[in-house]
Length: 286
Image 1 (cartoon, one colour):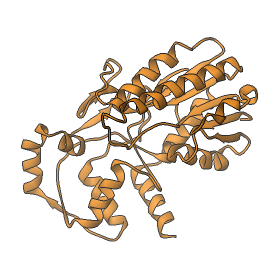
Image 2 (cartoon, rainbow, N blue to C red):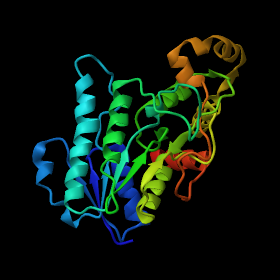
Image 3 (tube, rainbow, N blue to C red):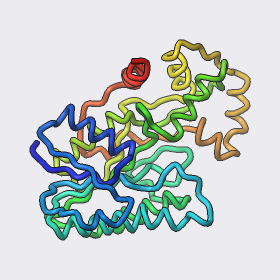
């Protein structure tokens, strides 16, 4: 695959990981990164780019009244301006990194019929960007929207690191048999590569081949560090009864999954949860 791929956003965990993945799995492609933190990006010549992958955005930031507009300026307005400039220069495909959060659900099963109901400023800015970007579609400008669930991998941020800290500090953990959709960073990168190769135009909700139980995930993380986690039967029961009343416990212990048939226009090789954890911690120990 000989394509010029512009990764819009520097110091992005997902963008940097994709750059490294491409160097190993598609070295014939030419990947470059564009700093989006100031106005200098507007001087970039897009005429040589075949694909633009927008990964720049505001995430993992506590929302306040003072920073609410920042989410819209970066996640929505910046993305749309970038896409318009890319389209005008003849770029053939624009890939936008959105989020599962646009559905506004803490628990449940997301299907092809599930409507977008974003609740936070972050989710609303992503959903509005999706809508505006979709209007730019035409025969010569394909727009691919990515809505990944929780992303984990070497050096990741967010909810996974919170679970990892618990796995390394606690001797027991509430045992609740929930199901969550998650995706390993290399699986996400493999999906993006497939989207580029197959010139996808539309929405994609990538996930690992297997759902994960929060308790099992914490137990496997602990095991990878040589620790053992004792199942908290009583605490698990109490959480299953009362946890649904609290947002934080719903997010951690409730079930939230993509139905297997949702948003999967491409096929790609995905490694298992066990393999991904082994790869992660082998690298960290090296």
